[in-house]
Image (tube, rainbow, N blue to C red; front, top):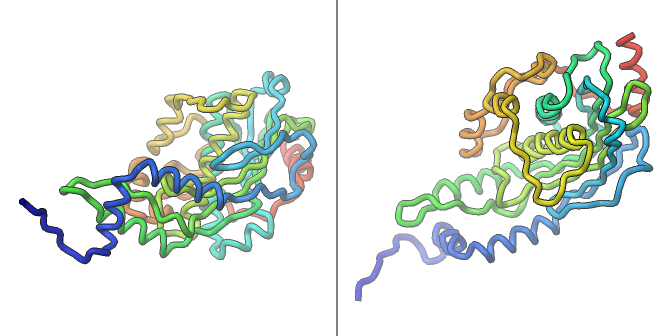
Length: 312
């Protein structure tokens, strides 16, 4: 009988993770259960004009409550993205001001680029039919050590010389909670949301950064909320939308459709994606924005009034 030699201890991590790769249904179910049990709760920051119209909580991998006035959004043609701010509690969870700026900017950039499919984006100081503002109400920092360990395991795991994807270690995952709204020139709320999500072991890249997960999730939120404003309705389960040409161009680091979006810098594109595969922190590849450090959140009505005075 021919035996296949195996080098290394019987209880080596390499052997353990190889055995896991041979049981994808079990792994998938386990990861989904762990993600559901460690979700980030929705957190109200008391900065929206109103919370009265928000619907019930929905979602499995993440939670959200939304409101959208499709009829009220339909005639609006221009939009302005107010730079994202933090509640004092959320700000205290991230020590580095540069890290806070990185996450907020990723959110704003995703919003601006995606909204360009439907609206003409204008820079601060110019009149807009729609003012869009987001506030980060909570951040769960990523455990950098465990993220780094996940990267090492995934890069070193193969079967017969063929690299095999390995689920990320399901501990120390980061997350984020956000509230946002869009109001018209008169201060009427046309859309709003509470949104929270934690990274998962199957699709979230383990980046060696305290805000590695929050960075990716912030961009995900920007895309989600913009689709609510572009379509004027909530997306349906399993609904898939094909990215527009201008969004693909921006994702690859190209020039955005409107100059107003240059305020938030350009996407790292393929360079950023390749770097993330090796666990590199987003700070290494993200393009610098022209936005100042994120401010502490103020009630949305105050922001709308201030923006209105600037554009008169």
